[in-house]
Length: 142
Image (cartoon, rainbow, N blue to C red; front, top):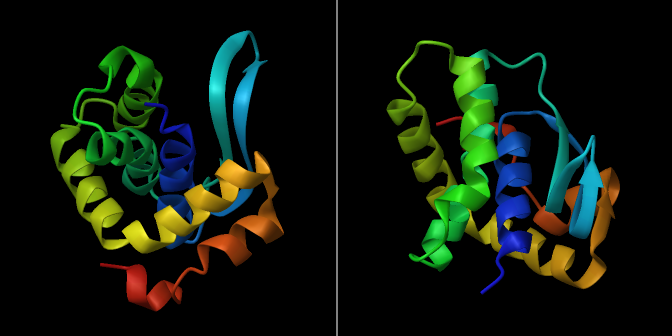
């Protein structure tokens, strides 16, 4: 089962929930800087604390795990490596657990965005915001 649209939507919604800008979502085969992908989320979170930035990366794998308990960890290894790079020596387990709770709580927004992404294949910032219909940021800062 291919859940790339949910994977990318989860990255986007978690990023949006922290106030990061998400400028592009895409699914389909391609490559960026020599790395092959089946989906990509472009977000701008430089102003966020490192732990919040790190929390965005496991959102994709967490969403996939919710949908399919037999997913391949090697396919999402890059997401975990990017989170670990931001955390340095810090234990990643609390970040992944916080991300898991956030994905669960924002599942309706993730599902709406995933369905739109599945249909459109590529989304810009405006379409992302309209499709996700995020609650006000004050509601998501838990």
